[in-house]
Length: 368
Length: 121
Image (cartoon, rainbow over all chains, first blue to last red; front, side):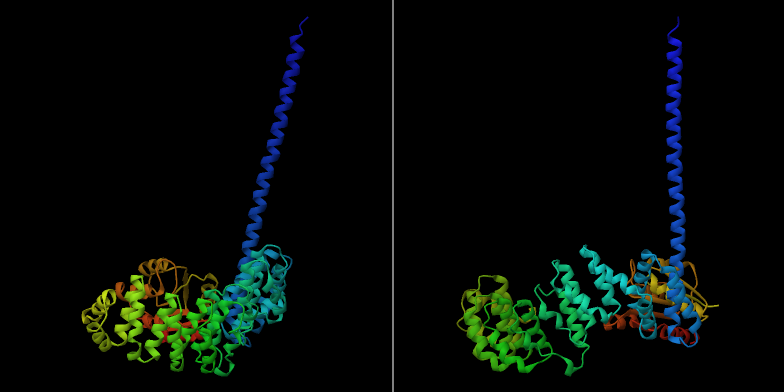
């Protein structure tokens, strides 16, 4: 009796099966990986080819559009190829949109119009509008930007709803889009402003305002009573930049505003508007205010619009009171620049301590 | 056959410019995406004209103009592309030796006309 032989045979079969199973599985996995790589490569090649076709078509449309009568057939063919290539492929549709945006911002005239026509005729705006319905705020922003860049005035209604979006960046992007889409009323977005007006928005609005004719420039004083202090500051600044002298009375009232930023902006505006009728109120503010920044602005403003002789004692008071050496230095420098003869007299007069030293130092012609 | 170098980091735009200039039979158009590649091209190859953007990676359009005029001592025509509202930069480009300037956005035909004028001058 030899019991070990069948066990050994069973073991060989068992291990043989195991090896076969592993070999089979490995082959399947390797074939799977290779097939996947091949499919990816083919898909990449196809996508690369499609992208090249899209690039060529858009180049044809943009470059030949100014002579559209001459190259009508070529342009139409390019448009129909684009339609065919992008149909049913959201990825390629997005590629066309990205490429269109890149070209559209650098071109003008018939070329720009032809690119916009592609965006409209291929219904690519639907891709952008679809993004507005997504939950991810970054995708919503992308959609808003695309519609604004491609000047889709028809979709203002869809964009305007995002002024109340929970995400700050979406609200910001919406306001920027509205400024771009409604250039004749750049202040429109300020009516709904709940956030701090960013420098970027300020520049954008200012640039749009500059492109308007003088009679189109809005009256900024309508925004002086806005609940958002950054809007009030900006509108005061704009009233001064666009020389709206009829706003001087209201701006003069705003110098006593409880918000220091508004107060400073109002004084600065009076300086820009050379509102000498406001000098006595600014003097009053100079005595009243506790803000050093506002005081400095008051002095700068008075130096431009006020009576220099009458203001000398005030300077002394501010310089002596200030504990901040930078403020003292700045004020002394402003004063000396403003009236050098006055400074000379003052250096010999009753100034004491810090202010006397400062004034004599800044009166030295070598440092000018 | 003329050879034109187009330098801009906006791939879509330089691709369109190359297409337009080739279509208008101005000769061979080579595109590069930054100032460093442009300088490399200019050192090793001969060109009849440069169209360059002002803002580019590594070396700006202004540095490229200086390089061509001072280091290479070449008098080939240079057209500078830039965005609107940069008067100081444009003035600087002319002082450095640029021959023409086009502000973005522009029409491809306008660029083509300027290239034609400078190449035939």
